[in-house]
Length: 342
Image 1 (cartoon, rainbow, N blue to C red):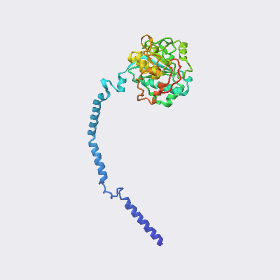
Image 2 (tube, rainbow, N blue to C red):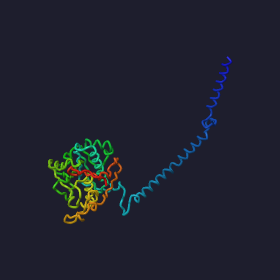
Image 3 (cartoon, rainbow, N blue to C red):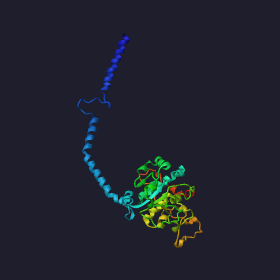
Image 4 (cartoon, helix red, strand yellow):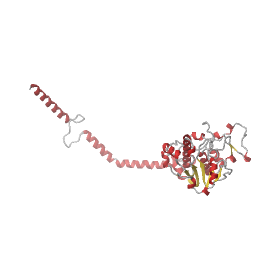
């Protein structure tokens, strides 16, 4: 009984203590009478009132900053000579040609995965260069599927949001009329003197390291479509074969549309490793052809290799300098074995 009375008293003491503790605020202060705000609550209320009172003032300041940015924008986007550096403005000022460039992706089963990846990067480069070109072409990808499409989906899902490009799973013969097609192949005896804006020029999308030499030329003949080679031999002496990367052919045509000169187009795009030498009148090299080829290298390409926003880069990753060291075929599907990066 005595133990029971002591236990009862201890429990009563704990209950009274708990009740007192419950009446104490978290700050350690006794609660305010009903209807009276605590010091912390009053501070929050004043802060909120001040925020509401200054709402209009903040709105006016935002308008002023926005207006100032609008006034400052022309000077930020205009470089020396008044030339604009804004990509958006460049695209807005660009004109679209009726000329069509088609990358034929029907060689998928002839390539290894590493070559498929190289072709993917070449296509990314073509897309990026066309988007920033002052005279854009109508860009087509045909026969897209298989390994190439899978690689694009795996490494560059943003490609499905690309603009200013027509992507088809069908063969180019089902997309463009036969009489409008011209296959670009270095094996063709026909030399392309000028571009016809009513034509669609086909570039063979094949990286084969010379395993299928002359294949695209043979296919063009079998299909009975026109074929031609770029007038490279008329302006340039090279210490290597005339086989160019897919994106090099694409960029050369873009440069020709911009400059109106094959000579300027070739030397703006050709990589130094090609050892290109300007040909003078009569087809003679401007310098002694017996000299070391290293003394006759073309100037570095002036083309920017950066991928614009919107491309994932995929990079773009995409579109790296490594690709300029790969010899790809624009015509025959033939390619010299890639050389070391310079």
